[in-house]
Amino acid sequence: MGRPRKVDERSTRKLIRCLQSLGDTRVAFTVKPLVAESGLSLNMASRRTFSRILNENGYGYFQRRKKGLLSEKDRKIRKNFGYKIKKELKRNSNFSKNEVAFYLDGVSFVHKYNPMSNAGSSNSKVWRKRGE
Image 1 (cartoon, rainbow, N blue to C red):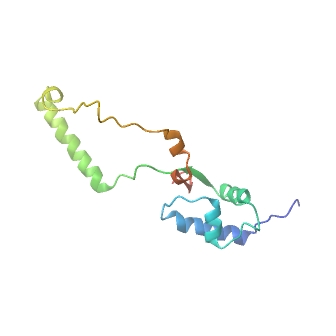
Image 2 (cartoon, rainbow, N blue to C red; image 1 turned 60 degrees about the vertical axis):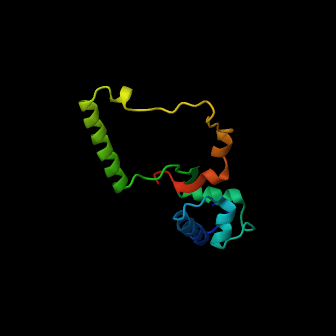
Image 3 (cartoon, rainbow, N blue to C red; image 1 turned 135 degrees about the horizontal axis):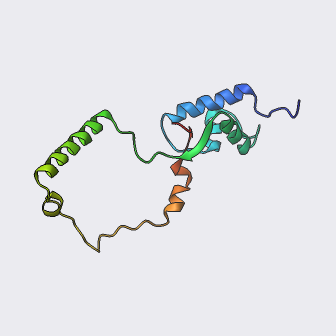
């Protein structure tokens, strides 16, 4: 038998349904706003209990996708560019030496300040299943 669950099946379904509806917007949110949005209360169980329920249902708090998925239009543009460059390299073997210019300037150096703290912040993570 064991200890009865604090969150019943109906509340679990409500929580997951809310997560799926908010997941379409791809807005970063933690467990507390998710519970409040679903209409449940943190008085019935702790934040960790709700997090455990989401984990049991296959959801995890994963790193947000930084790049968008490649659309069909972008794929065609990239493919045509690759064919064009390949043809140009066959025609002119010194293309990269004579035709490409690089801008080298020590003044316009971009520095990231502690990228690990940005990666670990709550805005860079989102609730989703592993394959999504």
